[in-house]
Length: 200
Image (cartoon, rainbow, N blue to C red; front, side, top):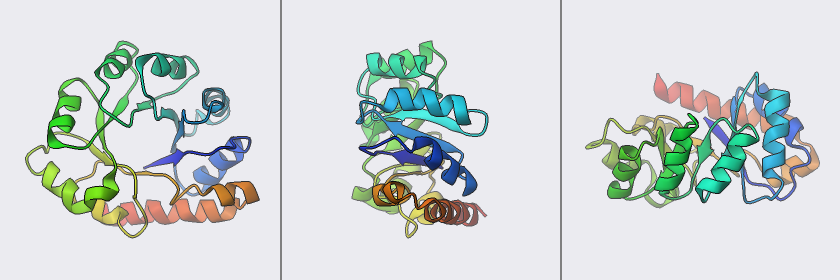
């Protein structure tokens, strides 16, 4: 499970990472929609890299991927199918979750070398759509992103998701701003429990 951090203010990134870790979330993605994200990736990788995976999200091109990898990103996530970005990540032995939605895009991303395919936005088709994709393409590691919540996380896993990525349903800007770390920890714990139950 990956926590997707898309915040305007990343000054509390280390405390956020601590809160997520306390809830059992060991993978965090900082989206490059914030211009401070690369610096934060480097900071959190240094402070938490021995306990959690730290990656870069919303990577739109190969140049941005290279910058994030140089800062310490351990994985790269794109919102769309970007063959050049996949190639760059393969060159630097960095795992990539390449965004795609249609069956053709999903297969193309996989054949191009994506380690996982981020099915985005997952809210459009829901678990049923993921199940339909996983049927003829069981070899592809699908990761639904966008609209994943406590209500449907387990269903996504049962539908064939290799993992899930959760954004504002886990990392709420209001909670981070208020320093409500216990609430974030509890949310993380609940997501982890839902996923574990679904896998059993």
